[in-house]
Each structure stands twice: as structure tokens, then as C-alpha cells.
Length: 523
Image (cartoon, rainbow, N blue to C red; front, side, top):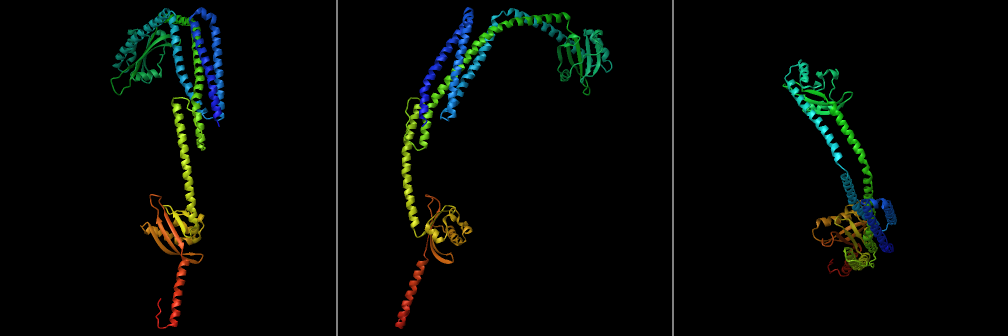
């Protein structure tokens, strides 16, 4: 019933396919013209805005086309047309396959373009300024390394100094090595000794907790820092090791100002480098233009890929939709639908195999229907026989649960079929008390007899009347189905007739004896 929508989609696909291919070809042409215009200044100035507008219109057209395709797909999903969910999944997969590589290529291209544009500019000035900065850093690093060596030498001298003489020794070593400020502290930052030149003030500039922690871990600290109201300084902090295990490690900090000439030259070079960087910002315009071209290329490529993905997804899902419709028809019992084989690929092989399977299912369905009819006839025949038997028939499963009972059995046992069907023999007495002796006897015979067949007589009381039952039991062969069958008949009237016949014979002989006393009475 859903075949016409599928066929209409298949007829509409070539039109959309032609439109998408036309837009893709036009997009490739526009991108080529954009790349040529970007490389040619005169062509760029004359036609680049026009090319950008054309690219924007093309992208808008592709976006409208994709919107239409997605709107149609949404309608199919809401209508619950078979294949629409598969189409949606394929569209997502194909879109991701285009989006992920395209985005990666876009990012790499933008990065490469930025590096290429940077190489177009004169890098000698940039290199000179960077060289000046590096030279200033090198001078400061050498000064910092020299100050670190002086601090290590002072620390070695303080190791063997006894308590109370650290201040004098520290003051003498500071003046000897030409250091502006030296401070000896405990590992917790408490000042032990402090020495500085007259122009630096009376209070030391203490190191921070992080510096103290690094020095306690035998990691010397050195850095170039700006101290408020004092300027640029070199700071070095080294550990002063102890000779006793009971003493704590101490920290030596030395401060040395950076020469004003070096600091001023470094600031000048840095300012010049900053100005040069501001001048190079003009190249961002060119980067934006090339970046815009790449962005348009990515946008047109992705939109074309998504539009093609929708068409390809519908093309792939259309044969599956036809097969699904045939499957639903087969599920309803209609084996007449045969799908035409239109290709030699895997879909064609699948369609051909499906048609073969349909014919086989049709043959199998006819065979099953025929056998089911035969089985129904046999079942009706068996039920007719059981319902017309004068003997009662009971069929049990392997757990002695009643499965079948005929009409004669309900009459003889005086029990309704629904009251005992499905119940084990052991529970019959709980539902109908007069059935308990019969159930116990039958169960006992099956348990005590190993033979496949057994036979017995028993008396059965119903509504105050004693009946004599002839009962036969049989175990079903395991090759058929595990279970038990009990056949019984009410032989009360037969036994009574036999007794009446026997007493009649006795009476006849007594009468004969009365007439002829010489003949002995024989019973």
C-alpha cells in the first residue's frame, strides 16, 4: 500500500540530483575564480566583491535546497514511512563523514595560510627586535647566574659559623661580594641575620612561602622581579645546609638591583618590539580575505556534501523500503508480491534472494495449511470418537496433571471437566472429596507397576451409590510424548447381570431338584 510514495520518491530523486550537481559544479567554478582573484591584485579589486556575492547566493541556494530536503524527510518521519529513519541515520553518517575531514582540513589550511602570510613580510626587523630582547635576557640571566654563585659561596661560609656570629659574617661577605642585600632566615621564614647597604632601608624584603618551600626541598630559587618603589631586582634564595641532624636547614636570600642602563635599554627594546607588532596588524586584513575564501569553500563543500548525502541516502533506502513493504505483506500472509530486480549489485542479489524466499514461503505456507487441515480433521475425528465412547478416558502429563477428559469420564466420575482439568491427581481430593479414592488408586497403580500396561477393578462411591469400575492404565512411549492414559468403564450393571443370571441358574436347579429329589443339587 506504501509502494506509490516510494516510487514517487525514486522518480523525484533524479531532479534533485541534477540540481545538486549543478550547484556543486557552479560552486567549484566560483571557488576557482575566488582563488585567482585573491592572487591577482587588479582582478581582486574589480571582481572580488561580485564573486563573494555570487558565492553567498550559491550558499543560500544550497541551504534552501537542503532545508527543502530536510523538510521532506521530516514529513516522512512524521508519516512513519518505512526507510525514513534509515535515511535520517545515513544522512547523519554521511554529513559527519564530510564535516569531520572538511573541518580538519579547514583548520590546517587556515593555520598554514597564516604561516604563509607571515613569511611574506620582512622578518629582519622582527628578528632584530627579538635579538635585542634575547640579548637583554641573556645579560640578565648571566647576572642572575653570577649572583647565584655568590650566594652559594656565602652559604658555604655560613655552614660552619657558630650561633651569634652570623650577622658580622653576613655583613662582611655581603660587602666582599658587592651585594646590596643579604638575609639569613630559618626554614619557616624567621629572620636570623640581615645585612644591606645604607640606601635600601632597615627592613628586608622577605621571600614568599613558595620560595621557602622550594629551598627546604633543596631547590634553589632565582628570578628577576620588580619590587615596588625599588625597581627591577635579581632575587636568589639558596639553602644553608647544617652539619647536625638535629638542626634545621636555613635559607639565604640575596637581592641585587639590575643596573639602570640595562633596565632602560631592555624597556626601550621591548617598547620598540611592541610598536612593530602593532604595525604588523595591517596584515590581518589579508588573512581575513583568505580566511573568508576558505570559509566559503568549506561552506559550499559541506552544503553540497549534505545535499548529496540526502539523495544518496534516499537512493539506498528506497530498495530497502520496497523489501520492507513486501515483508509486511508476507507477514500478513500475502505471498504474491514480487520485487523487480533493477541492478546487479548487492541490492539486486538481495532482491532476487528475497523473491526466491517469498516463493519458498508460499510453498511452505500451502504445505503447512494443508497439514494443519489434516491435523484438524484428525483431531475432530479423535474428539468425536472420545465423545462417543461409553468408557471414560483420562490423559495426564508427566506430572500427573490432567490434560484430557471425555464426556463419559465426567459422567462416571460425577465431576465437571473444568474443576479438575490441569490439576495433579494428588489435589483432586481437595477439590472433590469423592474423587480422592479413585485418584489415589490410579496414582498407586502407576507408581507400583513398572510395566507399561496395568489393569484392575475398583469400587467407586458416587452419591451414596457404589459402582464397580474396570480401570486400565498405560504409559505413553517416550518417543511420542511423556504422559499417562487411563481408560475405565462402569461395569456395575454387567456384574449385577452376571449375578442375576447365576441366581437364576440356582433357582432353576432348585426347582428341578424339588421335582426329582434323587438328582443332587449342583451349583
